[in-house]
Image (cartoon, rainbow, N blue to C red):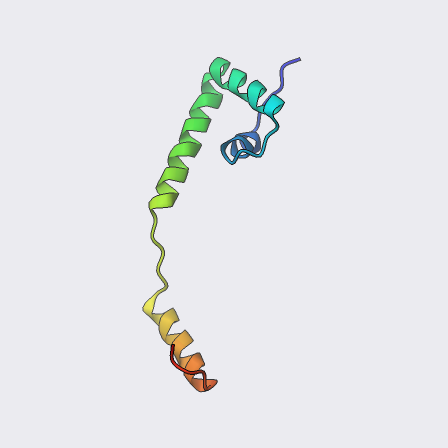
Length: 77
């Protein structure tokens, strides 16, 4: 019986949350299923892009936090 792998299985594989047996079956499936391999490569690419994103709070949020801190009497750090 051939196991059909889902995107959730690919995520589990990427984050090393599979048993060794599952990993072996998935690797075999990746070698035999071009569309599954393409989906896997796209996930890896997306993860690489997410790692490059630098998030910063907006000035409005920073000011709101500072204002709240001042109003509660918290000391400056």
